[in-house]
Amino acid sequence: MARNETPGSVRIRTGQGNEWRYDAIEKAARFYDCNRSNAVAFACEDVDRLVRAARAVLERDDLTRAQRKEIAETLSTRAVTFDVETSVTVTRKGDE
Image (cartoon, rainbow, N blue to C red):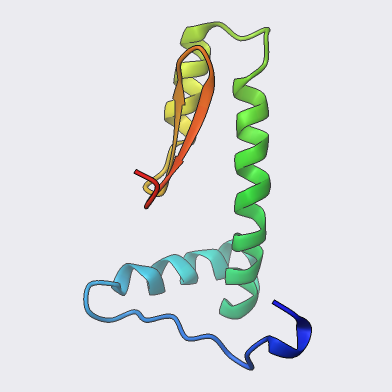
């Protein structure tokens, strides 16, 4: 999106079954020790970097299959699942 197309604000719906979003944003704000808007932006930027880093760790040659599986289970979340087979795959919620 070009700079001049950036909206002045973005609304995140937290009603109708999405109340968990507000709690998640509050947790991020506490974690980053900042306001909710910055917390959302920081978390969005961090997730891509963290997933790439996790994939790099899981692809290391010095780990056993059991170690890879344990790490994959530990790093998997509600929205991102790491599976270890002969290769490393990442599944995002909605890609299934």
